[in-house]
Every structure is written in structure tokens, then in C-alpha cells.
Length: 333
Ligand SMILES: NC(=O)c1ccc[n+]([C@@H]2O[C@H](COP(=O)([O-])OP(=O)(O)OC[C@H]3O[C@@H](n4cnc5c(N)ncnc54)[C@H](O)[C@@H]3O)[C@@H](O)[C@H]2O)c1
Image (cartoon, protein in one colour):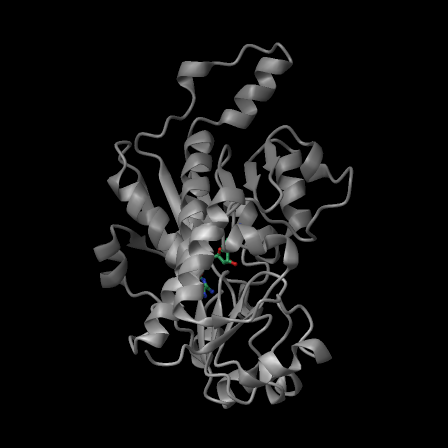
């Protein structure tokens, strides 16, 4: 039998067992010669021998940065497989310059974010937060006159993998949603094939009952929803942000929600976490969850499973499914 390639694991120690529970770890051990110690510091002299021999690196949340100095310690490294989403925090340009293959498990992290978004779209289409607030304060909520999901217009910002997942679910839903899409990388015909109507971002804000944000955090997406665009939203509209906090102007959103004119469902904020007592944490028409839309707890093994599949593909000479190219970084998460 051919010699198994040497593999080093590098991530936060507290997540290792969630990422690679025993059955996945056994699969990985069967595929590769896995260094027994988790590496958290690539300059650790105790890890020097293992790093020098490693052909594969399996990283996860909290892994060290792969800069030129670190890569000098791994001269044989051929692939860095990430059991998490974005690689931009650890995969520096030096990784691509050395021809190391980079893979991400962002596909596996997308599914729960799509579920989170669909759950919040349903709540938003029933104006659940405002109704619940009225219920608590004893004001009579006019339940059956409120907006329902049927025929609601949902504006999706970004046909990212998550955005596409949400569009697919909206198109297939019984409610008959109208779906608008704003994305500079998608043409009208492609949007049409997805089941959405391509519009400009201002138009999307004007026409949507619910706006859901799925674009990556890039220099040009900072405050994509700024004060002017939030002001375009219809009275009673809702903003959902499960992407990144920087995409929405926090102060402007707090002002709009503070008047009760619009509602918001936020899994991400800027800053994150919000300081105690922040208006967005106190308003009854705003729900803030602490960045929980992606894989959590028992779901984290989906990321490990995806990464182990990638290791197997690399070892058996198949193309990596989650391969990330340096050029992609200008438009991906
Ligand atoms: N809340 C969570 O736990 C969680 C988990 C995973 C991902 N996310 C976030 O969700 C978002 C989507 O992630 P993904 O992996 O689906 O992204 P992705 O990498 O698939 O997105 C890339 C696509 O976004 C679109 N895009 C790029 N620039 C745009 C712009 N200016 N306006 C509109 N669309 C644009 C393009 O279609 C591009 O191909 C990201 O912000 C990501 O960080 C959050």
C-alpha cells in the first residue's frame, strides 16, 4: 500500500471534537498519517518535524495565519483544507504564490444559514416581532389584517451560495413569494433562471417587503444598506442580515427601527457583539442573535465531513469541490 500523506491539524482546541468526532477522525486516520497533536502555533518547536513533513493541513476556526514565515516551516505542503467557511483570514497571498491548493467548507456552512433565513423570512412576513410586542403590552394586535407570506416581495442582496439557497427555497415555497435580486455579478437571464427578477439595489429597497442580505464583506459592500437605502424601505418592511454586520449602517438601522417604521432580524452586527444597552438590543421590533446562523454544535461535524471528503479527493487525484482560487477573493466571502 502506498505511503499515506502526512497531515497536520490546526484549529482552536475546543472545536476539534466537534469538527472531527470519532467516526470522522477514524476516516481521516485511514486516509492520512495524522500528526497526533493539534497544532495551534506554527512556530512551536515541538511541531517542527511534523510541519516539515506535512503534505496536508486541515484547518478550522482559530487556525494560525499561513504567512510566508509559517510556510517556510512546511516546505512540502501541497493542500490546505479548511473545515470552515472563509479562508481569507488564514490563507495569505504566500499560500497561492507557492501553488498550495486551498479548499473551503463554505458549501457545508451555507445550509444552516439558508434555514435561519427562511425561518426569519416567515417571522418577518407575519410581522412577528411587532405583533409579539403588542401582545406583551396588551395592545390589541389586528392579527388577521397583517401582512402574510402569500405574495410578499423578498429582496435578496447577493446571489451568493447562501443567497442562491434562499432564492431556491423562496421559489419553491407554497407562499408564492415575489423574489427580487441585486447582484452586480449576475445578469438578468441568470437571475431569471434562478426564479428572481434582477433589479438595482435602490429599486430592491423600494419594492421589497423583506430585504435579506447575503453579499460578502468586501470594501465595496461596506454599508451597502446605508441611511439613504434604509429610508427607501416601505413602512412595515423588515431587514434580515445573516451576512456580515459591516454591510448595514448600524446607526441608521437603529434610527429607522427606533421609529417602529421597519423591523430587523440580525445574526451579525457592527460592532459584534453590540455593546450592552445598544438600542438594537433593546427594541422589541429587532431580534439580534449572536452569529448563530452557521453550523453550531452538532452541525459543526458537517464542516469536518466536508473537509475529510476534500482530503480524500486530493489523495485520490480528484478535483477539490471547495477549491478557492486567489482571484475569487475579490468577490467571495
Ligand atoms: N451568520 C453566519 O453564521 C454566516 C455563516 C456563513 C456565511 N455568512 C456570510 O453570509 C454571506 C454569504 O456567504 P456565501 O458563502 O454564500 O458567499 P459567497 O462567497 O458564495 O458569495 C459570493 C457571491 O456574492 C455575490 N456578490 C459579490 N459582491 C456583491 C455585491 N456587491 N452585491 C451583491 N452581491 C455580491 C456574487 O454573486 C459572488 O459570486 C457572507 O457575508 C458570509 O460571510 C454568515
